[in-house]
Amino acid sequence: MGHSETELMLKGYGMTTAEIFYRMPDYRNVINTFVWQHMDLAPDYPELFRFIEFWQGNIEGPLHSVRFTHRKLIGPGEWRHVVGEFPIH
Image (cartoon, rainbow, N blue to C red; front, top):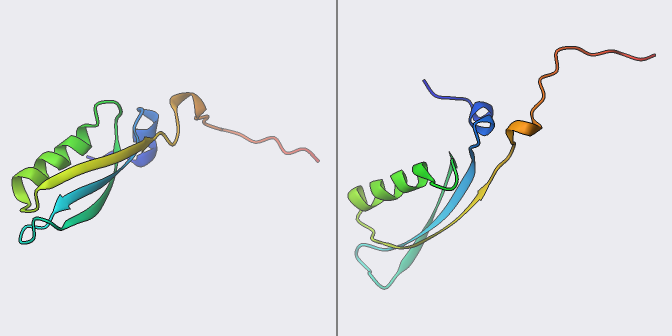
């Protein structure tokens, strides 16, 4: 069963965005781009590397380069669970 994005963020995951540059299969001098985004865990980036391995094994366009960025959206110390509220006049 998958985890919600909030659960993943509390476990240290963040949003990884990769811009993948690849050569067109029929025109090797033409480079195209593909943008990939997924919740991933820095510094090992298992999801990104799993996707790159999938690409190399199943997609005809050979990779030229990959540029990526990673941003933690929330950290474990930033989350507070509020159970009540006290209204003041």
